[in-house]
Length: 435
Image 1 (cartoon, one colour):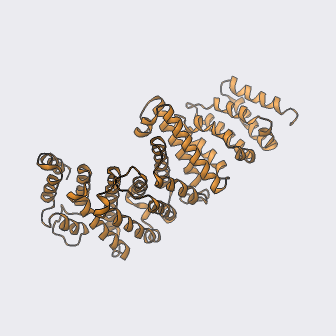
Image 2 (image 1 turned 180 degrees about the horizontal axis):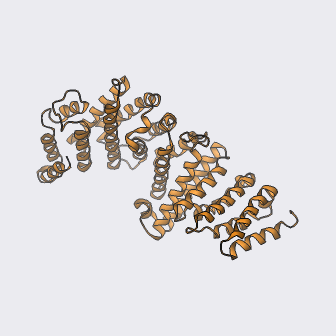
Image 3 (image 1 turned 90 degrees about the vertical axis):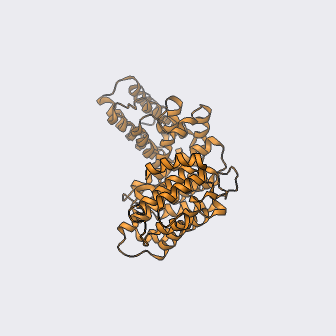
């Protein structure tokens, strides 16, 4: 077989490229899997990996999911049996990231990401983190060079280069997701999850990259967290919260500068909290371990002397964070069988103080976002149903910020103060319709 290896590979690749899909292709793909198992690294050493991969790429057919799945399964066999030489020369693998992870069809990106994740998991923690950062940087450079940053900003709704940029970011997020997702039991994390998430979250917290890299990095991390949330079961979510809070603690604090790491780190927490109204905090042990960290974040960023100096984009994320925590508090009140724990009571107090700052005219917060938060506080706190109820934390907040009697009228007055008389009349009408 080794003596005739070149002829065998040539026969297989020629057949895969020349003929339409049929039963013979299935046999050829099976032969590739057997060949990889029997010959192993010799396929790579003798230069046959690239011809086989190029041939397999030609039969990826968006209209034939079964054929595509079989082709990517053959790639996975190559990754498995040629893993040692491939991991020593990752550059040869990078040339396939674009056509596989940037494919326009989501199911092809997903198949390919799962196959590549199985190979990349075999890297050491440091090498894996370095490789992922390098791939993200290379992707950002390529997207920016092709003028595709608008596609990253606008999601996957664009066309041409913009669409391909969004697809590639989604593919990279899928690779990371399959690396950190647990193998044995659905809902758990893989042993590689903590070091990988730590690298990505800390990279977000630095916030010093150029525009292209910053945008791509944010989209990838947001995609990873978005894919991870439905997979995780609450008892296993603790490490994700821990790494996200730790990265936020390491983010440089802002004083009107252009460092956006704090904004991006807060955004990770917002994505986690907004999944099913904080469902990933529903397990008692996880909640007890993480609520204290969330309280510290709210107390620090919600303080007037801190919030007023934040960049506008960071203020927006802080408002979203406070809003998401109010929503989680409302859900907890509905489902709680016992009274609040000491930690939850402290978080409630921190939310009261932070909301008072955000709703205050001195905060400099975006009036539109402030209006959304005020409406959420009023509705979720139940103030519109029973404004005089002393049992609601929300009413305590409103009594400190505006008025203990009529929250709606007080909110309209506050909005006028924020926008000025002319803007206040417009904002008041909008606020009234919203409530």
